Image (tube, rainbow, N blue to C red; front, side, top):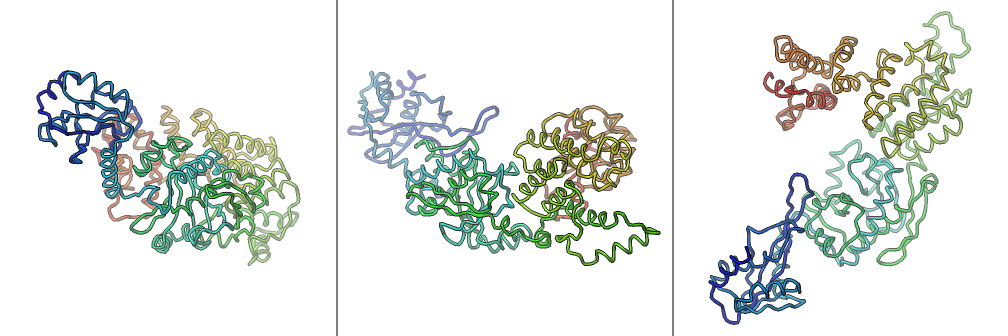
Amino acid sequence: MSLSYIEQIKQLPTMPGETWQGDFVRVPAWVGEAGRKPYRPVGFLWASVQTGMVGASPDFLVAPEEKDFAMALAALVAFGGNEMGGTRPERLEVRDAELADYLSDALAEVDIEVVHRRGLPVWEARVRALDRAFEEDDSLPGYLKGKDVTVKRVRAFAEAAAEFYEAEPWRHLVSADLIKIESPRCGAALKYAIVLGAGGQEFGLGFYRSVDDFWDSHSAPEKYQQNVLDQGIWSILFCPITEIPMSDVDLWEDHGLAVAGETAYPLAMMFYTSRTRRPSAEVLSFFEGLLRALATTTEEDLTSGRWTRDVMTYDGDVEYKLSLPMFLDPPSPRLLYQHGFHDRRATEAQSAQISRFLAGKDFSSIDEANAAVREEFAGMPLDRPKYAPRTPLEEAQDLCYKAFDSIGYRRVVLARRAIEISGNCADAYVLLAEAAASPQEQAEVYAAGVEAGKRALGDEFLRGEAEYLWGHLEARPFLRALQGLAYSNVLLDRIDEAIAQYRELLRLNPEDNQGNRYTLLPLLIVTGQDDEAEALLAEYDDPDAVWLYGRALLAFRRDGDNAESRKVLRKAIKANPHVPGLLLEEDESETWPNGDQSDEVDDALFCAEVLQQAWEITPGALEWLESRR
């Protein structure tokens, strides 16, 4: 192919005194192809030293690993034949010695001098100009746009960010753990922070100006956004390279900056209502130190509630004083409830108090007992129990009730303390499993909780009271642990084990106060156990969308498209018309164009989440749904 380029170059007349500088250049855009990671295409660019004009071969862009020197000849033909008016230069300058040798050999028959030189000032100036033009169109500025920020500063920050990501502080801290940065101070917007990542979706740090802002972000998000975005809000998020500004991509690629993984490029930004800005040198150094301090924070530090770290930053050694204010001074259950933090399990503490009050008393009727309970507990604060625990297990369970009425790391500390008091406290294991970092770890802790619950109840109790187990307050921790274990097995693709455990839960708690049937139904369908799924549907007279659309799906799986299956589907659609659009993954505005947030919509969302896979794996089911609605 290079011979054809040479013939074309021969046909171009020489422009006396003309010198072109050239090199490979990365296109500021990403290409995504099936079966491979996104990449930035590479092309070859020539620049005229005399005119400053630039040109490339627009139809010759390849992945970085596919580039070859022939691209320089293709670009030479295109540049000379188009931008330079059908001429060729007397001299070519390139900074790659191997490329210079290649061009010298290829152009031996053409009167063009090829020179290897390290610097290409005209070419570099033109590429910088093109990069600036692209940055102006890019909505996200790069790190070097921050005041006094240099490559060396970004390198130090990148190393700290990699340390933070590799330390995985979200294994211990959740977004409800508000961290107060007592020192150093770095402006009003950086007084408080939270660690993101416990949910497995978004990793990094979020920042708050005040405790009130933290509460508003949970209970009044619209108010929070209106108040805060006008002032600006900082965050450090870890992203794939394709989601950071292209100028930052160049920083990491050109200077080999540290990164902890393919999805761990740190993006530090302040967001405003209509713009964004990058950190100054001062803020970037503050972020660097904070990331290092959190990366080296231990569970012992967290348990103390206040700790200090001396860390090295680009600007020298800095002492960080950090604390967990809501661990040191826990908010009341009432305050938590007001701001959307409510764990229904905490209400069982009142039932436990009533049980202790009634123990040993003899009432002539249920009405008399109820009257005594009302008189005894009227107006009693839920967070100040009146009746002390009678056994180590009750003492441990009381700590779990406190944990349910807490947020963040305090729940973990209380759960661990509960296990120290009684190893038979299943709810303590449930709390620890909920804070576990992986499904495997969750499964192990839930399994320990199941065994603890069995020890607490005893084999005789489980055999004798199985059909009424949920009605016994002391049995609920065991049922919660078994439910958690079953769901962890679903996540680990241990489907047979999960099905067996869900069946056992429904045997023990046939009224299904825990909602286990909603998980069991799709598991039975996906594993082809349609008869068992039909039996489960018949067992519960359930008006929810999951039951209606599950029944329609099973009718189609059994009989295909016939009068009976269509009748069942029509009944489901009439009861909740939102579900088909969700199952078919249509635009949400088409599913409920008026932004409906009713209970019917919540039911539809739950149904689609539960049954999506079952509809997808059934051949022809989604097409049938689309045609019949």
